[in-house]
Image (cartoon, rainbow, N blue to C red):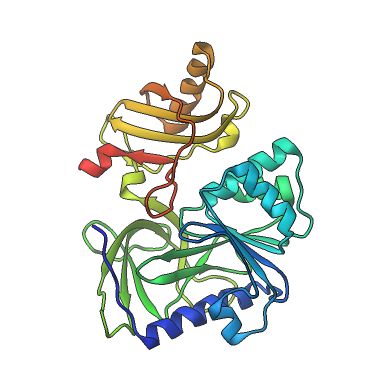
Length: 328
């Protein structure tokens, strides 16, 4: 159910402070050029990084592009803009990196890749290092709360909960707080939004609770964002887990731009592949065998070939979606 969350001057202040904190933690040179490829924007060239950054610091210019733009055009746009920093969704970054590798395109000006809005797959950091030799810095955020947790600048596997602004709990199905190393539901409470308080608001995400970070920051730690319940695979024996199917496992088998896997029924899996060509029957069999191996189960796998796999209305791309989980 879509909700509209109201804020006030204090919540806007904390939103701004946490955005600036993220830049400072990662030692970004704000005199450089910032580029964003995201939803809900019109393509434009801007004199600064944005209202929040320019209110606190002197910044260089920025450029924004709508994420619905074709990947080849996105890559051409980046080459023309020569930014120092790029912000986009993880799924879009993956498509850019794959196309850049195919076309042997490098962007020497880039210093850092930043992601937000989706779960960051574990293999995407390795892909970014391989293709452009760049780090990926992730942010855990939501429309309701803004920045919930920022990636540690020292230990990139850790996310520091922004506890000055939010109370974040990770609890099991009975509501008991999870110990470090356990995965549970994420509940968030606002500490300053007296206009519209949200108390133990369940945003639908699951996360892995972490131990105190060795960087010395005293903020609580999320070790990993596991995903949403609808992103959980259901197995025939009643077990469930978040699936992992790194793209690199499939690229030796087939050439494709995008992939989305939908579990319609317990043993009914649809693989949606976007271009450049349909797979042969033999290749589909090889693909299915590898997929079942990675999903740790036996499934009936069928294929569809859309020209483009669109993100959701909120601009997020889900590479795995279980309709079984949604109906449970």
